[in-house]
Image (cartoon, rainbow, N blue to C red; front, side, top):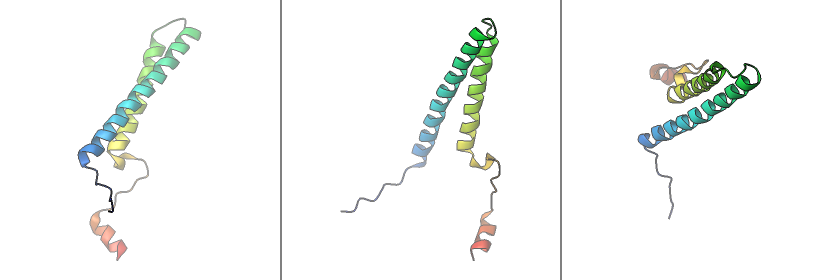
Length: 91
């Protein structure tokens, strides 16, 4: 009775990445919003632009992380090796 792990379908992998990106967006935008509210109250005499700026920075960071999650070739320093060269190197 060996229970080998079932292979994960590609739909589940994409769904997990999307869920992680959505959670990351909510958290980072919330942190940016909070930092913007605090900066607005303490430093900028209750102006609205620090809140918008903080929320935008949080959403932008979440977008960049999500982009790297779905497209790992965009990670700085990553080199893509074609399959023909990989076979030459392994033999």
